[in-house]
Length: 404
Ligand SMILES: Nc1ncnc2c1ncn2[C@@H]1O[C@H](COP(=O)(O)OP(=O)(O)O)[C@@H](O)[C@H]1O
Ligand SMILES: [Mg+2]
Image 1 (cartoon, rainbow, N blue to C red):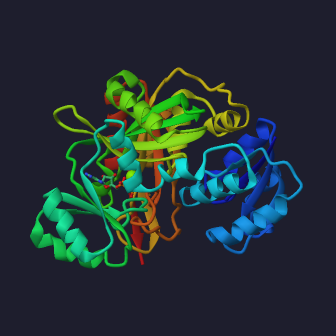
Image 2: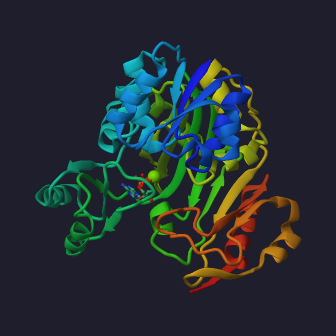
């Protein structure tokens, strides 16, 4: 089993997937743009070979180089779990005749308008939306969609350049701010709770499923710096059976193949489930570690097993609601003080499974650029309300301070 794995060093979770592939018996051939000597230890230790390319995002160039590099060798899989590369991986598979999801199937997980059209064609509820490439088109779409509405990039990530517009008076301002975005989606604002639906699929069939709730919704979390955003996996999937049923139908509508999916969905106050978006890759910001702590298994390895051998040996039992709490320091510059961690540990002890806050002296991260912000803690509890109460204690009592 020879697996070409794109971007084996970045984002931070990728070395663990390389490890997972090696552990299920694959020879892993990495392709990335960092020099081989600067690869993380875990990546280097588990790679059989490595191709350094000048620019990993230059599709034509990477296509040519990987084709030349693999000529005369048999390659069984070409995989990536980084959103900007999922289409490139598909093009490589198509070009080299390697099994896996086609470029067309992956496009349905990458192009936000196309995915909504395909999901809607299956009779599922999506926000009313228009794809726009000009100011005039946005204005016309706004009239048609009505207020409040959302303007966001067709190829977006991490809520970047995403704005809620409450009325025509705010439209000019948002048009100015999104002038650099070539193509936007203008869509109906869906009021409600926001969840994920995550799977590992084998030939379109979910062998693993997860739901997590965002508290608050990501767009709100990204607008107010004082918030410590929480995301909590739902132990008892019966609470979100509506979203799970909906998610399975979405996978069918989009022709999912084998691998991770990460979907977002909304539940309105009247109970209606509305599609948000979906990617054919793992969720970011340590969601995989939350899923691992939810069931005490290793999805880095189980993803690899699904991809290589179409098998599932993870745990089906869900033991905990696992919450991640992202922290943002008060002030700018370097971290000078962290309060409240000892108190939280004394009170909640074993419920706290990860503490990964920036240390004193470290420069703050840009909280708009990375959800992980200035670090995070993870807590878990079998009872939903207890889990949220502990997460709330971390959100309010752990405080980080920074100074220039
Ligand atoms: N139609 C919508 N109605 C309400 N909120 C939305 C809508 N579209 C996006 N949002 C908000 O913006 C956030 C980011 O949008 P999303 O489509 O998930 O893009 P991405 O996560 O790729 O940036 C969502 O998590 C949600 O909070
Ligand atoms: Mg999203």
